[in-house]
Amino acid sequence: MGPSPSPSSWRSRAPAVLPLILLYVIAESLTEFSVAGIFQAIECQKAPPAHPPEIPCQSPEVRKAASRDRATYVVITTVLGMLVSGPFSRALDFSGRKKTVGIAVSVQLISTGLRVLVASYTAYQTTPALLVIAVIQGLGGGPIVFRAAHLALMSDSSSATTRSLHFFLARVTATAGSVIAASGAIPLLITENISALLLVSQGCWIFYLVYLTFILREAQVSSASASSESGFTPRSLYKATIDPLILFFGKLRHGLLWAGGVVLILPMAEQCTLLYFMHIFDSERASVQAMYLVLSSGAAGMMSLLVVLPLTTAFYRRRYGKKVIVEGTATTPTERTPLLKDETKLQKADAVPTPPSTTTLSPNSLSISQDLFVVRASFVAFVIGTLAMIFRSSVLGLTIGFSIYALASPFQPAIQSLASQVAKPNQQGRILTVLVVIDNLATEIINPRLLSRYGGPPDQDPTFAIYASAVARKIVGWLSRYSRFDFANAAFSVTLCVQW
Image (cartoon, rainbow, N blue to C red; front, side, top):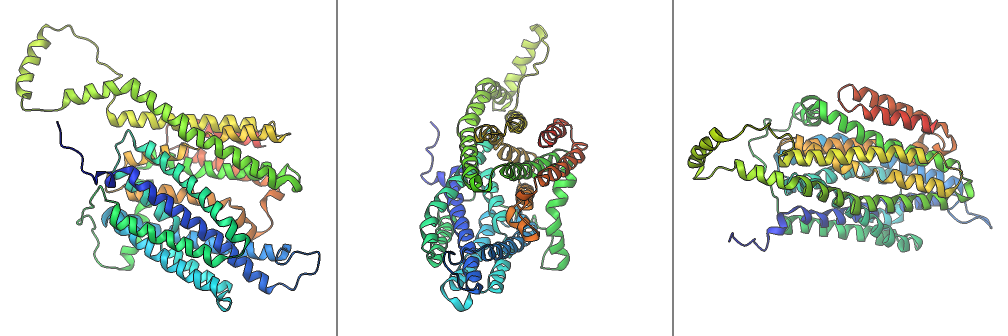
């Protein structure tokens, strides 16, 4: 019998990171809700008194001004988060995951504490004050650093064959955290109790830091001698900023360029599709039907994550798992290896030569094959769902198409798993950070809050989705030249024709 597992061994396994993800998503979502409420209160103070039957602070002018200020806030945090993600990702690889995340959490605690002051005292409720807080939050890395760190922690403590499943669980946990945060924020937003909302968010950050420091154990210890630069100089900062990009688009160009293109294009196409098809509804029914679409796509995505993908993984393990085990035991050296070699020579002399087997897979190739299958299946679901949206004359037809489209949601965890297997252990933090940056960039580019900052809402112009999809198709066409996966270009060509 082998040694019994330590009672604290679960603290260094991949599922131990899930509570961190849950606490982070709840805290981050509550912060976003509170920022929107504070901007609404600031613009409400500037607005003239409402006359019946107008609702106070709900005029189009107030809502538009609050949306514009919030978009500026998002731009600042997003841009700064992308700029500092390079040094943070390098710290993830060379200074340790927990230490880097601890620095990011400390910055979040400071920024959330300042928001509590702004929400509690009317004298501090100004737009410049919130924008200064946005700068502080952005310097802490924001969502990019946390998402990349969570993926790196799970990658360190999981095997190649189970990594994609753990990434899938991380996405499911994040979805659950968003639902919990929205459910808890609604009563506080109705009563305009923004301070209580921020205090709950601050409590989540404190629990996050306690769990990270005293409960979670780091599975991989970073090499202290890996850092080649000492001291803080402009050159070292510049190198740390562009180092992940050089690693991603240079040394690992062929495989990860394609992966990065997929991560960039699919969220962008999803946002474009939703905005475009919201335009075909009447304005009075748009909000209800948009909620219907979100619920249906969320249910389809959860079904894909919780049912389809585990069944796919089980199929691959059942079909190829035995071959992997046989190969592993046959190549494992023991103290009897010299004797076995002599016996093997005698057996080979009398054996009939057989053609070499081409179906035996190593554990790493099994995982890569599994993840590639998930990515290809996601592309198929993406194309079929978009084709089904042709029947958009009714809400039911659009809902069915959007639900099929949502089945492509597992592509992101599968690509992240592929990237973590291609990268070396001391490169995973930077590679995963680049993927998260690309995904965040794609989501924010088509974010209606940002687009409303520069003109009207994009859903007023249905050609917006067509032009955005055309640009997406051009980008994928350029990326496909560096990859052998030409089906990506074909898939988005079909999508462009459908949306046209």
